Image (cartoon, rainbow, N blue to C red; front, side, top):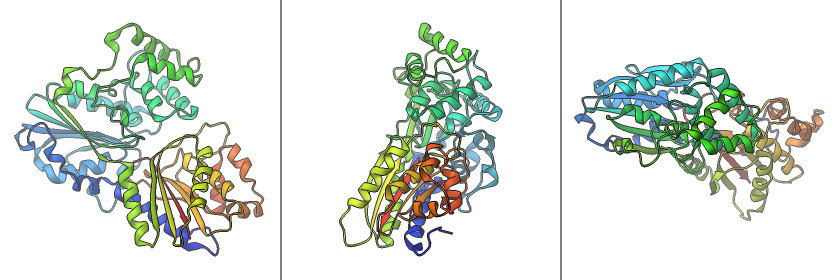
Length: 442
């Protein structure tokens, strides 16, 4: 149901445009549109064997596509995805048979994350010079595939991850800290595979597509330092809230250069190729194609949308209101906003953005919608991908006795939109290229 009495068309269009964005960023589409087998340091058929490892929300589907093409050339492999993903494969994708599929926690790591990281590192270390380590990387890898340097324990890391997620820190800042606690991030997976060749295929879930940030950059040099990780924790007033073991590890890294993550000059990266195959821009272009087919004049505004979700939303609404065209209009944004959690409610950045947009749209006499959704199908710790707002949303809420401002103050957008039947549900999409916002006006 679309939840908008009398104006179903614009909401249905927004949902269809969002789903087209997701489809355009799914692994089977991306891998068939790129000549990835030509990117390895040597032709694939010249390797003794190909060992496959992968981490992230797209890893299982990527592995299935790789298996279809390489078949018996794959000697061994394992990938890790969030819990429940193996039970929800997309109908249009094959599931790997030769490559093992593991499950782990996200966005906070669990025992499965540690087992996965140890398995990946073991497979990498077993590679010989005649082998190719094929690494499949997508969003979520930082939590799904991680083990920790002593004295940091899993419980210590879990608390640190949660504090960072609630602090308002962006993904660059969070992964600066994560990489300096990890045994696999910050280029350490590629270092473990030496002297084998490494080819990493990456689907980006970070603004700017920085390969050193996506899944904490397991196959690329790390430009960040222990000192910068400490600075992030201090900036967000977390330094004295994280466990003592985390402080000990980071301080040790400042005083002992041998603990630092591998840097760009490290010769072991000479046999490593890391290539981007999927981005938020690709998703936006697919969304734009769908919108044009539905009769909209389309403009992709940006694929680098950032900022506090509740502060970004009014700017998107203003941009949609400001467009002057006689035909239906579609504005598209992509990126990743943040939420500083101060309340006790449920929600994610997309739902919070939609709630703030509803307040900004209140009283606007237009047939319009602003939809915000995560391309992975999950917005924060909820089962919804996001939500949408129209000029009638606030009026409908107040008629039901709900104060939208109070829900926003409590970070409780999920409960608000659940009551109005305006949550966006897709289920796991097996990809992740951040978020997409669809603004339509007829």
